[in-house]
Image (cartoon, rainbow, N blue to C red; front, side, top):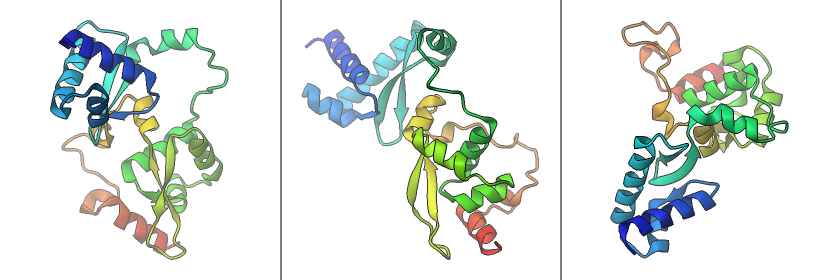
Length: 196
């Protein structure tokens, strides 16, 4: 296979997969070196970006790649698709997603403590939609279930990883919240839950 055929093979495999695929797995299917597959993926990604294609390649942690629709064309794609079954996320769902994404892994009681309202139904709906998932149990009294965002969340919001999330506060702006003292999210959560 020449380089153009290899790029075509990568395109076909990524298009056929609904989930992110490891570069090593793509390389194995093509019977090429994983480093060469990574290089070809970057070439394909650059081609899409250069010609402002309606498609883009997202790179996730762990060397996983996925083909996605470029957000710029999202409204037009929505007009073509039957979106009646995919209602937009409510403000409550967006709040819960933000709490989880910026503080994960978190328990339901932590989410409710931050939001100040019961979030059980919202968490259940986000689980059904595959935007969050259970991440084991926290080492706290009662061993509460922890939640984290999924690759689906990253894909829906056009993120490669959580590092691509916008900062919570502008640089130089003091953070009035509990993170001001430099503690990690999990110890903050543990302290909040122990007071409940």
